[in-house]
Length: 213
Image (cartoon, rainbow, N blue to C red; front, side, top):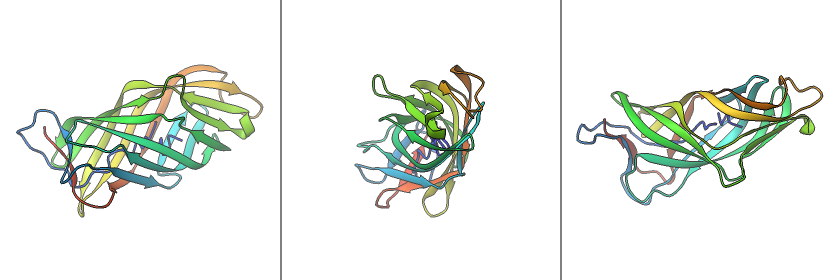
């Protein structure tokens, strides 16, 4: 799920379908900017390039991410993930986001063209990202949470960006630990990690970037 949540995401996610990333000393806080507005970005991944890892093992899916329409430069970018063809804990699985999104916050210029970001998982009231594996015998959910760190983005030639989640301490809840499930009982856990390597781009072409320092 998050494997492609590679939270989570997130990739996350793939979150930043940003084009060339540049740094500008004139801006104190990095921002996601585009050559024209409204702007939208997208990212897709195949199973294995994003991984959400729990105490029971890995969750991996094919994933697709689409950002909300952005009307102006902003220090945040919200993306809606969708997951399919999932495996979790070596079992066939489904991952349902139930309308949850990932909100990426541009926070730090690391070096030329390289930025770090933190991410929030934002869910509608009463909803969560649900992982159901092994025919419903091995289930977990990821609820809304804030300030997860961190995600790195790097400029590539040709106006695309790599998104590399390196997120740790993701909270999740095991809701069922049935027959054949490798969890250590139900309840709240905080050992989730979200890692991966995603390439993203802008919908319809055009320039999208992160600027600032």
